[in-house]
Amino acid sequence: MAKSKSARAREEYEKRPWLKWYPEGCPTGIEVPSKSIIELFDEAVNRWGNKTAVVFYGKKFKYKELRDLSLRFATALHDLGVKKGDMVAVFLPNCPQFMMAYFGILRLGATVTTVSPLYTPREIEHQLKDSGAKIIVVLDLLYEKVEKVWEKVGLKHVIVTSIAEYLPGTGRLFGRLRGKTFSVEVSKRPGLIQFQGLIKKYSANPPNVEINPEKDIAALPYTGGTTGVPKGAMLTHCNILSLVEEIRQFWTKVEDGKEVSVAVLPFYHIYGQAIIMLMGVLRGGMGIVYSRPDLEEMLSAIDKYGVTLWYGVPTLYKYLVDHPRTKRINWKKIKYCICGADTLHEATRDDWKRLTGVEIFEGYGMTETSGVTHANPEDRNKVGSLGVPLPSTYVGVVNLDTDEFLSPGEPGECVVSGPQIMGGYWKNPEQNKKSYFKAGGRTWFRTGDMVRMDEEGYFFFVERTKDMIKYKGLQVYAKEIEDLLYDHPKIKEAAIIGVPTPDVGERVKAIVVPEPDYRGKLTQEEVLEYCEERLAHYKVPKILEFRGEVPKTDVGKVDHKKLRQELFRLETE
Image 1 (cartoon, rainbow, N blue to C red):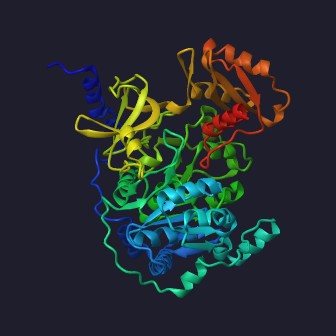
Image 2 (image 1 turned 90 degrees about the vertical axis):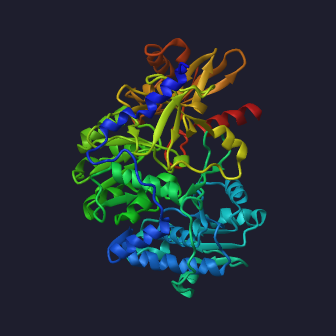
């Protein structure tokens, strides 16, 4: 029987044409780890115990100190009733306490569900109810949000900590001089516990708990995914460690025990958690940790600590390109400048290379894939591309409506299969049915992102399916128009959304942020004329709004969802 067109197309992806671009020595697949995150953490401490693991505003923590403090926290949690399989929420910015809590929770066989510091009480309430977490570790500056939902979600214990607890004395003084608040007073109440009190009270002797790396959930981060309601992505120890091992094999220039990275991207997000925090700690690296972005601090760290790995998102690179000090820093020690979480605009990429002399390597992934599925090879960086799939990762492109595989070169939905793919969404069988399908003996996860693969096996981002606009039955890709607007010399930022309109489906709306020198001077007529000269008529924005900024997600992406919500509220008011 002749094979269908879909089957033939799938076989083309199964051949993995990208393998020929792998760095020398990189295998086509990995051996899936059979140990837990805690086992590998202990091995790292045994190997690099006296080495500095973390530098937090000048205060240093050795590997053995980090483990000792996490062991004490684990003992405390056990005494509070936490057992294997329980959920514990961590509501902290990047700080040593995040890492202590993270490793302490995992040591008991429990699961960490990380909460974004940007969340509102309503969003916190949803995550705590859905995950079932009854204990939360929270920064004192964020405590007020938790207090508002305490009774609603039935919290048993709230463990409060402060950035100031682990700042060096000079750091606290410096903060006061600059007008920064590092701590606030939190009123006592039953169930409220001080983090430091637990660390001082308990010994570093928690019970031994057997962890099944393939089945036990290590992390439950929440993500909007391809639909609006945040869902918990079940990431096992095996999922996360498979990703760490894939990257270890792919980035051959990264050396165990020798790397230094700036950890400013949030640990609560899977990018910061798996790629920066875990890959750094488990491989003996040193992390220069910041609780919030400070461009001066981050740039100073490059020379002061000899930074070798730089992780960023497009927004961060854009800010650095515009920062006068960036071009005066010596970037030559940097082995990799990595960019993820969103697509990098060509102008930013080119400006970065001109200022620093260093290339940016783009990659792609999702919370559901433990952070990464694609990356650009170190010796063959194809600018503008998401790169190629990592070892043991299979990727295909399918028709959005039929799941039929499309031939290379055709745009369609990106589907992935590999050991780093989550086990499913937490307590959401209906969404799980929609998110997976089987073909060719593999289980494929639908990413909800439109991509295409070129003849060499490199993938290119086309559009997020939820950001696609339908105008009179024609498909309009928001990213195409945004990229065009970013190229305008007078435009700093832009966002495109569809405005529901009965007669045509959706009209294209552009939200434009002019460059500072052109605010109040750039006209609608100038922007629309620019678009009309370069776009098909149906892609030209029909509605244009100037703003001082566009809303962004907690990892710096343009928040199209929030823009659509704003539009919906205006229509219903």
